[in-house]
Amino acid sequence: MPSDLLEQIRLSGDLPRHVAIIMDGNGRWARERGKPREFGHRAGMRAVRDTVEGAIEAGVEVLTLFAFSQENWHRPEGEVRALMTLLELYVRRERRDLKEKGVEVRALGDLHRLGPRTRAALGGAVEYTRGGTTLRLNLAISYGARAEIVHAARVLAERVQRGTLIPAEIDEDLFSSHLYTAGFPDPDLLIRTSGEFRISNFMLWQLAYTELHVCSVLWPDFSRENLYDAIAEYQRRERRFGRVAAS
Ligand code: FPP
Image 1: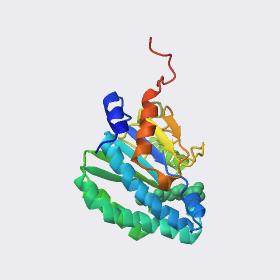
Image 2: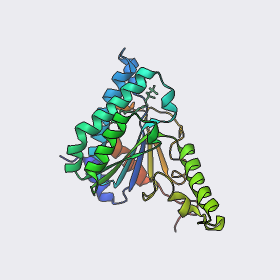
Image 3: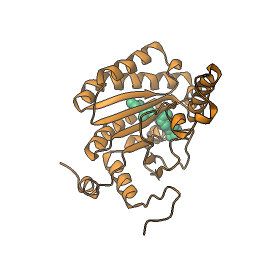
Image 4: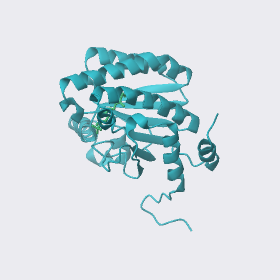
C-alpha cells in the first residue's frame, strides 16, 4: 500500500528525473553489531533492493548507485572479493525480477579492472534487461569521476589528432557525450547516507547543479521511506541554476 509520503510526492509532480546515491556506512553499521565489514555490505544489498523498488514506485526515471569506487580497490583483498561477490550475486539473482519490473541495468566505470566472472555477470544483466523503460538503473563500479573526465579528454584529443574534430567544436554537450553517463540527464538529486558531507570523486561533472541531500542513516538501514523523504525535501527546494528566482 502506498505510504502517505509517496502519495504526497507523486501529487507534487515535480519529481527528480535522476537520483544518484552515495551508499555509505556499511562498515560502521557492521561494527555497531560487532560483525565484519562484509556483513554490512550484505545488509547493504537489501537496502539496494528496497531503494530500487521505491524509485520505481515514486516514478524516478534514472537511479545511479555508487557501488564501488576506484579508491575501493585499495581496500583489503578479502573485502574487495566480498564486494565483487555481492555484486555478482545481486545481478544474477535479481535480473529476472528487474526485467519484469521494466528496469534496464547499466554498469558505469572502468570495467576492464573487474575480474572475468564479475564482468560476465554484469554484462549478462545488462543484456538481459536491455530495453526496460520503467527505470534505468546505473551501477557505478570501479568508478572515479576524475578518471572518467580524463578518459573523455583523451578520446577527444585522439579525434583531434586524427583530424576528425577541431578543438573549437568541443563544447559541454560534446564533452558530456563522452562520459560514461552519455545519454542520461544529469542527476537532479544526490543522496549521501551516513552523515558525511563529501562528494568522494563521484560524478564531478554531472553534479554541477544537483541538489544535495545528506542523511544520517547508515546505508543498510536506508529504505524507500528515506528515499521519499529526500524527494519530498527536494520538492521544497527552489532550483535556480545560477539565475535569480522567478517572480
Ligand atoms: C560504503 O560503506 C559502501 C561501499 C563501499 C559499497 C556499497 C555496496 C553495497 C551497498 C552492496 C552491494 C551493492 C549493490 C549494487 C548490490 P563503507 O564500507 O565505506 O562504510 P563505512 O564508511 O562505515 O566504513
